[in-house]
Image (cartoon, rainbow, N blue to C red; front, side):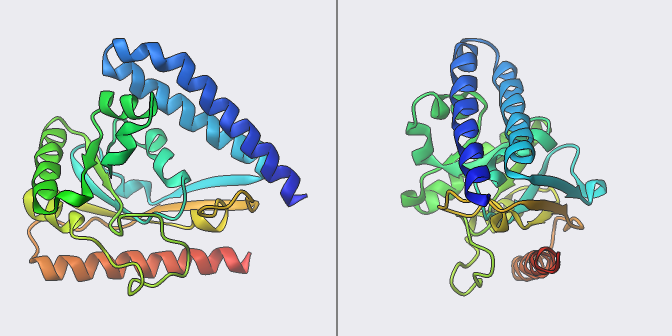
Length: 242
């Protein structure tokens, strides 16, 4: 049954994604808000398909901590789902992403159109400076910055020793006078990395207490990692009990 539901979702997901890309491709010639609106429609459709075909519900917790303007969201990253949900729960997110993704036809063009923050990981300090400049421009107009501190998808249970936090989030914290909102989640238990099978259940995304600006770097790094790892372990344990 799990295999049947997973395959059904996968077919519907790719069909829905292809249809939305084709429908909104002409929007690249229009104001960028049109593409932002299309991304939100696409992401909401994916969540509906998840529930209907794969039996996966979505629960958002801690909405009182969700930023309403310029801020940094430091989110765990376990699944492809983590990259689409922000189009649903934020008005106009500026997501930090790999520069290579901009080379994907149409998808990459849409990311450029919606002013995502592309980072060239091979450029070192130069990449951090460019990221900070783009992030400043985004927060000045009230956009929230979404960054995955570990830099890539990390399966549930993988330790920070094997997948350490990258310097990007600290660079943003030092360079921007805005709070950081940590976000924990358990999506990798239901939409696993590099797997076609899905597991029915409830994906939980939880906004944690914001970290105020101005803390020393080491204090910030330790506090962010402690809050994220503790909350993530709790969500994974909760899902295992159910």
